[in-house]
Image (cartoon, rainbow, N blue to C red; front, side, top):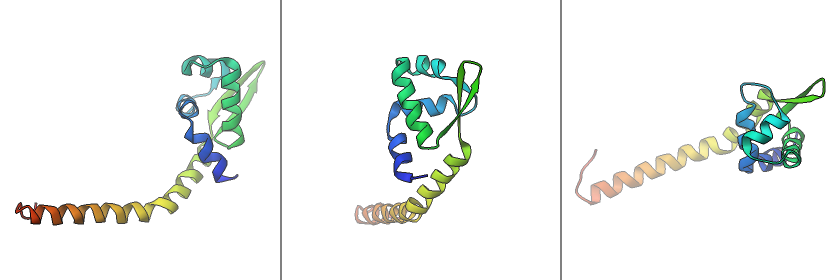
Length: 112
């Protein structure tokens, strides 16, 4: 599944709220719509984006469509983000700490 589509899906705050709702339990599309304050058609469009990105799974139970987060896909997303950002953020953190130490020494504060 394309990571770009997944990241675009996650960029929307309403879709992130929907993911939180279905993280630990299945929920119907109407329940999700009500919880995020969206109309049913708008919620349906958001859920389609989440489905297409592989972030949620849908199960039909009678006339209801029940949604639940796809934990395997989220693990893939997390791993991809970690590969991309992990080392870079570590280097940034080290650089910020070194800069702060340098400023403290220049200000006469000495090491902390």
